[in-house]
Image (cartoon, rainbow, N blue to C red; front, top):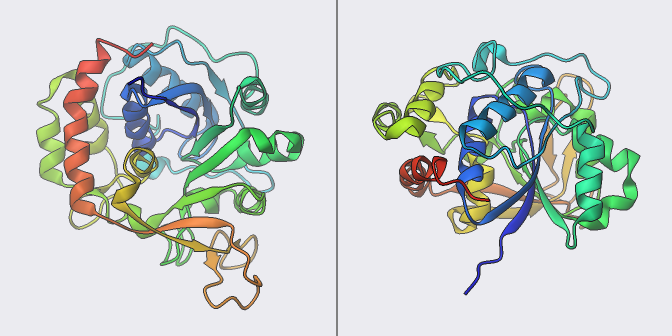
Length: 315
């Protein structure tokens, strides 16, 4: 039986955990990657786009177009997270110089064209701020029927990582997040409620380095990653790819999510669990729990697969 691949656009800001998520996506036969787009987030958009190109070349996947997107949030001043991800966004491994370039179209126009030309609606996975997607929806609202669903890394119902309530991706551009959550699209929110449980242990990071060049690269960037929990390092963005492959690992609840766009709680994602404001409306499937042991077992099994696929790329 021929497996039908899921067609994807990946909108990212690599960033170390984005880089690991992309590494898996580039090597899984279940996915048909149509476009990679960079956005300002963990580091500048010039650097995030360069990192997309580096990884596409590392895995011999230069067949996938790469487009540069928004340089700053819709209304706020841009502030990166280089204190977590390093100046380049992907320290810890010596990537060769880039030999190919982004396409001429910017991320919004490239997404519009790919969606418009697709015979069936596509899934968009976003692991950075949602600025590119918000711009797409504002500039081309007619494209919504061509978006099958959004799988978003971001948000939290249980507390933040850049403030007491806000997760980084939403905090970076809360106005964009507000547009996205009010878009009426099918949204799955993979936030800190699960990503802070999906940890890669320090021992596993060391062990991964022994599994070929891919293991060396993954271990190198993860070692340089300054996002640390007591039991290991969180793999935030990897959870979006895991969700597409193994949704059974996750517990989801449907909620009405409101994004706070001003004041001390800016960037917060609030679920109206008591239905005080939403009148029964729901706008997101929210991941609230994960099988953390299954996550790490799955992730470690991906490393030898990625190493094999590096020299036998999917075309």
